[in-house]
Image 1 (spheres, rainbow, N blue to C red):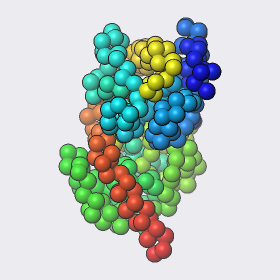
Image 2: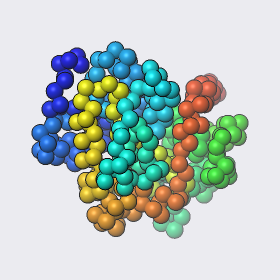
Image 3: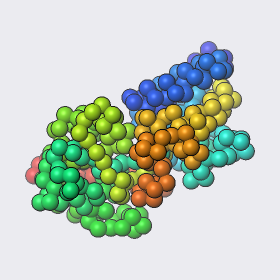
Image 4: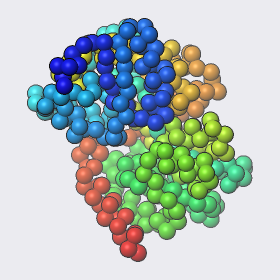
Length: 336
């Protein structure tokens, strides 16, 4: 397969699908083709395609040339050297455009492209304007904020939410006190109406009114708002991370990928993605975004200050054991 795709006239890019795929196609993929003649095809794939990428690189059968990957995925794919490293170094640090990206959104193997977060989203028709939920503690406060609740059926984010709901400050979340987190979850478990598992699901739950308040991914909450649903969200204690452009090790079209990354990282280009709640990694992008729209983006400075950056290193080391414990806890809840 690699030999049949040696032409630099086409690159395949793994992305998150859904609204992200639509946004990238409109703002990045098609304009890049018009400017360079290099076709970009976005391929939606699972949220954590680490095993797929490892297999592609080992077999040299490249279904993708590059991918938009989260911090943990990049760490897992570059944890070692030689045969244990599955991504190319992008070597773009000195590029005039790339060099302006904030250092916190860069690594030798990834160029930050989308800062996003988990926020507390709620139905405005379920709460009085003078008393709306703002913090994770409010999500746990059944008396002051009655309503149907949702939680993400995964320990990532849910652990941090449970700890902050129990009073743990942002700078003391990591390493996570798991006993405390599960005690906190025990307090709210019988009040959770829906344990959601995907972006489209939580978006639907908010738009349909099946739940009144829940943690939600910012792009899904914003899409619901854009489509006219009575939904709002709070920036207090949001949990953020970022995706990066990454090139698969040995990809035959690596140089074309680098050209695409430079194109996609232009501040004006990043600004065009603001309508989809995609937070730019270039601060200069905010010069081209209307202030009212900028205030709804994770990487807007005042919003970023209110958030907690997820500790990818902690989850890289502990995710398997925490997922197992969380799944066992969920099973116990089902039996109760």
